[in-house]
Image 1 (cartoon, rainbow, N blue to C red):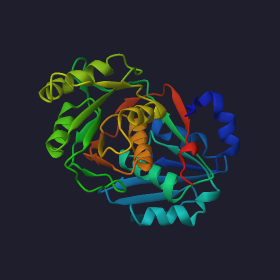
Image 2: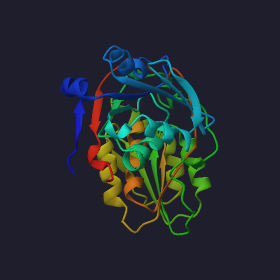
Image 3: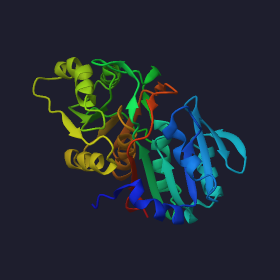
Image 4: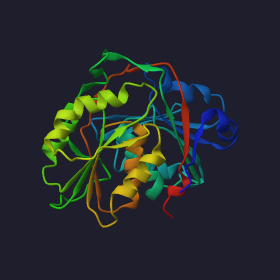
Length: 300
């Protein structure tokens, strides 16, 4: 598979000429969350703002000042169909959207309400607010109950593989392992390298005790933190086609999106999540902007 990942500065002219629907999150304090909506507000394209609340409903606002609240699983697909999304060239800004929305929309756009072409964007900030130089980052204010991501629920299996993309908070991995108790194999994946050199060490350090308790010979995999294609390839190469798998995306949004893409192409896949409440102001500035061309993943 061709790795279609580009720097925004190399492809921005093409996007300006072709994208006619931008899907973004509601504005937040972080500069990266408003980058695309501010940049394209006067480009005469349709902008759809989305915000997830109570894990079941979506607040929708358009740049024509239309506003409504709908059910995530039923209402949002109807809205996508009503705007003739099959004729749209879509850019989904995953930096500004909730993780659950990223995964749900990925499945919708790849398998249910497919656009003419499909791009996604991810903006890495200049830095995250530190909680401690050696312990981690203050990214989440609350961790919720672990449950299946809407659209990715499957029946529990006794013979299954658990694959967890690790984040900074080791307590999140502990919660996943306590919830999914019956698995034959554990595949932990750490984001590496990344814009902040200590990320890899922090993620490993905070999860090390938990990983060691699962077995001395446990293999830990690594994957570039901002690459959807690398994460998808890693899953495809480590999980057999007939394998029943549970994915737990606790890391970056590109990895959450990769999990959703993999699940769309691997039927025996369930995605679970701990529905964290993220801090509104977690990061500062804008660093690299990556654009992913995902049209090849659309299932005809």
